[in-house]
Amino acid sequence: MSELTVAARYAKSLIDLSKEQNALEDLNNDMVFFLKTLKANPQLIAVLGNPIISHQKKLNILTGLFEGKVNKISIAFFKLMINKGRGEVLYTTAHEFINQYDFIKHITQATVVSATPLSAANKAKILAEVKATVGGEVVLEERVDETLIGGFVLTVGDRQIDTSIASNLKKLKKNFAQGIV
Image 1 (cartoon, rainbow, N blue to C red):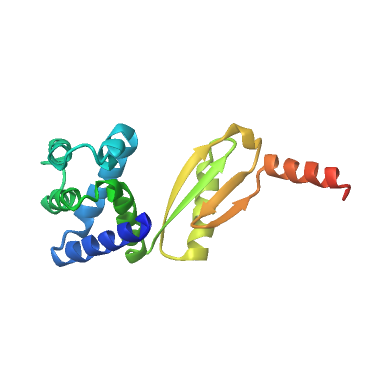
Image 2 (tube, rainbow, N blue to C red):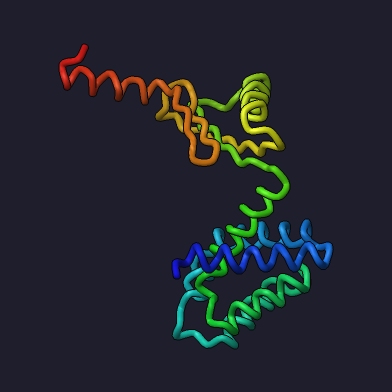
């Protein structure tokens, strides 16, 4: 079974439990915090996935880092995953939990990469267009990439709209190389 399939099943179970316990929002915040911590400390991901490191050491690390900062259900879930020898899928499971939470709450994650920071008016216009297309709430992450020269690249789920000048120049160069233009 693939890691993603396993993670999706554990995430679904955790979602169901958190709904029963009326702790869905708390657990979502915990998983966001957990992912941020793992992204900031890639060594922690390596430790969790290392079969040589004992379960007890992994449990000690996780409880030391997160006890008192996250819900008791999250701590119990971490312990369950480690005891079952599934420490290597904790990162993916947390990511899947957030994806499933977003699906339940009709939240769409979108990313816009532009050559310069977006003005408030441009951001509002892009946000309105995405909301009109997908419906529900949209969380827009902004990034700046000066190599785009101008324009932007908008990614919503598996769809991408590329209006960047750099992309247009690449297409033009390709067309010249093929003798189309």
